[in-house]
Amino acid sequence: MARLSETLAAALPTLTKAVFSQPTEGADAQKVTIRPVQGKSGRLYQAESLRENKAFHRNLDEEGVLGLCERALDGRYRQALIITETGSEQFTLRRDGSYRKTGGAAAVTRPGAAQSHNREKDYILREGEAIPALVDLGVFTKDFKIVRAKYDKFRQINRFVELVAQGVKDEGMRRIRILDFGCGKSYLTFILYYYFAVRRGMDTAIIGYDLKRDVVERCNEIAARYGYDGLRFEVADVTRDALADTDIDMVVTLHACDTATDYALDYAIKRRVKYIFSVPCCQHEVNLSIGRGGELDLLM
Image (cartoon, rainbow, N blue to C red):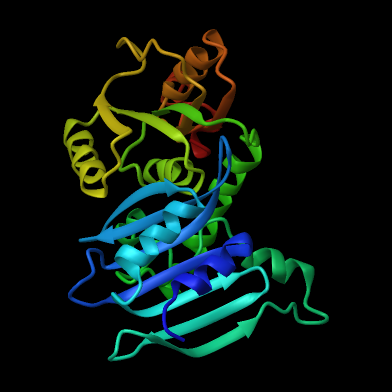
């Protein structure tokens, strides 16, 4: 075949993912991935460009994504993978600038495959996606492959995202504002931002609160490195400091220490926040109120 543009054009109606990798000197990104997303006016295509381990995103219509392929992708990447609902095709760049098909497979469900097995493979976050937080966490290698010893952690993170996705089902929702209380090192906060801003293409803003200034500074540096403009972190004590007085759609508290969870829930209820994802932590205040020197000492 001569060029990939025609193949991509034919694949767009049922496209699942297109990946352009192994850049030549003429390429302006290490890797480009194109996925369909649902926009306000209908189906769009999100182009994710990876540069120096930072992911940059933009949503394009059909004409825009084909124009991108012709201008910046076709002939500038040695490998191309196009996956549709019916199968996949692998292409390799020839010396003359054309591509030859080197592999392909039909999308076939194996007869007798267990339903639980199929569901287990259908993760929201997938191996091969440019999710820098999973690289920093040690779940993905630098080329976005799952580290074998971290597979359980990968599954747990996907379960967290799945719970959020089940809660926020409104497909017409294009904007979301989130507060994360006691965010700590914030790996799940970064993944939450990735899910809404990148995977769902929403206008996303997240504020993470934590008591530790050094942790907050580091998280802000990481957010800047990832190119996550809508994510910021602030030093705040949720028990006494003034918090964001804006329209908040979601409050997240994952093991916020001591009574911080209670204050976060109080904040959410008073402001009629629509979504609350909370996992309570230790209750030091309750613990300190329990008298010593009795039959419970063994348990304490």
